[in-house]
Image (cartoon, rainbow, N blue to C red):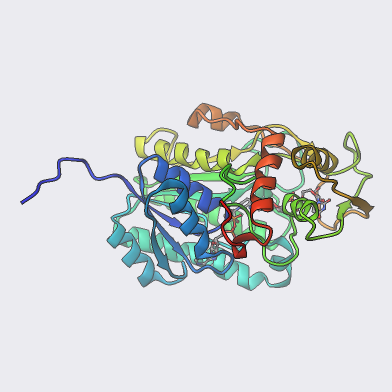
Length: 352
Ligand code: NAD
Ligand code: WQD
């Protein structure tokens, strides 16, 4: 009989792991030696993303096609994977859709997380990293946003993120053994430098970077710049864009923090660069990185948009020893590589 003296690698359940941020985080987890099980219903993603994660890493991802509202499937996945921790990306994220269909958002994002936490409790899994958002802060009363900035989400999507954060804070007070990281992302953009995985929005992109990329590749004629009369240096909206690989690496650091038991019981952490960039900064950087023109037209402001916000990332630096490494040029160059290698997203044949 063979005996295996190697310690078993730590196992993580990743909900929503086939999605944009989840797939990039799976790459980092596998490269760091974790065993990864992805639970996803593919409502906004493709299993092809996981095939490509395997191609990048040369490692296997265990897949469970299921909904996070299915408690039995969650318990099965937690037990069979022997997960020690969960990274919870699964959820819906389209702001406009959340205004039109709020119940769908509360059902997926809030009820889905209730089911997940119940399953974790049943299975004795007590560490979770949650995908929160800078959207919980709402209208800035001061900038940069620090984690103690008041909460004032301005749409149902943002409210579901705050509701889940509140639920996790309550769980942490009731169950002091739990270790919880609430990661508040700023504006994730970019793609893996291999060009094999990236953001693949369905239909017309709502977000700036994928729209710019589709204009540059010729899928759309021109960009609408929503407003040029804000009180910002060039009049267009300012955001803290963060490379998705930096963001993914932040999750590994957060997992590490939970496992080491440093950083408190339930801790909110901004993941941003600390730098604001305008819409026109992004257009210019993309043109430079791609060598393509990005025609645009100035339009009226988009209802509900904030003029400007960016992160104070010092908590991440202090607690995680993490700071974003990649520039706006890197974000554009990597988006362009992904977009030009996969003009139709995951429906494109693999060319490299
Ligand atoms: P995404 O849509 O690409 O990924 C979400 C994944 O979750 C998809 O694979 C989807 O199929 C899956 N999913 C959704 N509902 C599910 C359910 N009920 N059961 C099982 N799987 C389900 O989105 P993303 O950009 O990768 O975002 C990941 C997380 O980060 C989300 O929770 C999102 O709200 C949060 N977030 C995203 C941004 C952003 O701008 N991308 C910013 C802040 C926070
Ligand atoms: C960025 C800037 C637009 C598109 C959203 C969610 C937020 C978070 C991230 C999850 C703004 C301008 C955009 C276009 C444009 N998601 N713009 N033309 O609105 O900062 O954040 O995604 O938590 O909750 O609200 O991102 O990329 O849509 O916009 O001029 O076609 O680009 O006005 O100034 P946003 P975005």
